Image (cartoon, rainbow, N blue to C red; front, side, top):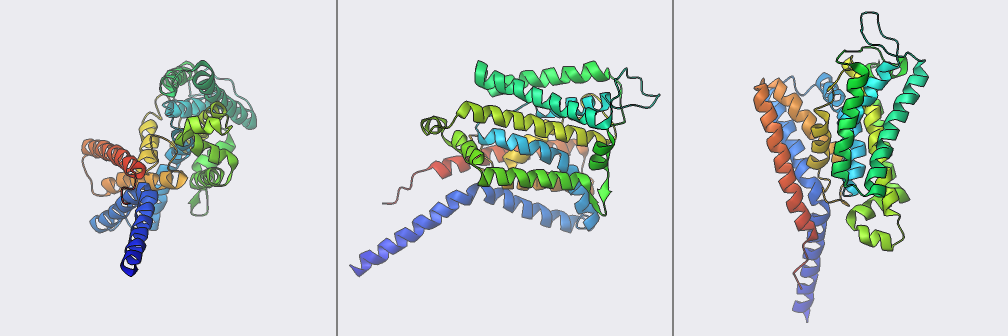
Length: 344
């Protein structure tokens, strides 16, 4: 009896260990990757491990970070939004279009007071998100296709307003938040941190956040539980568009210009941050903490490769390979977490 009791205790301990591994498996690999990159680049380049460079890294990932916040909500629901970068670009262009430009800028725009330009820009990204939501949940178009169409629509808005030109002025408030700083801390980093924190609190401590996880984890079960799954999916698509719009306005101020195709790389950056961080592409698992780890991994990787003067074309290849590895890990982690405990 004593031997059986010892065996039962051991089996119970093993079950607990396996359960913890399953719960934390999604974050373990990205976190180990983050530590490995920090160690490698700190040794490879003494200039990498400095406060000034840390500020540079945080500034560089802030725009992608704000976009990734909204995309995290969408992915947690088991959906995808391919329009985030184009919506960001369109919103930034709209903010510039309604702001007085220098005489040297050859754009036939419509200047408005700064507050009005900001409100119209946010309204525009909200409407684009609402169109995505209606198409996906009312008409029944898969989010992949619906947001692909919105990608083209937003690109068309940019082309129509900017007409191949470059605008430089945005509302003063946007200019300050996107390009200014308070002491050594850039306002852009502060705003991104605030949005990340707010999103984490919503997902972790509100009923809406629980519903997002329920819809992504098992949509049919969520419906049987009384959750309006279509409303949740529509809401996260609107949240994604608004986050992209905020990032677009601040990004234009950070870059110093508004032009076509300025945010094209941010679609891959945002998706990479979410996936590399460990949020499941199948929905229901992950969160803002995972996205932050993913952002830091990508930011440190890009910055570190610049410090060791690696070929720019090879840098693109390395980013692609890391994204592929993250996708593969994501699939296998999902299988591990869903695997039954075969010890009896």
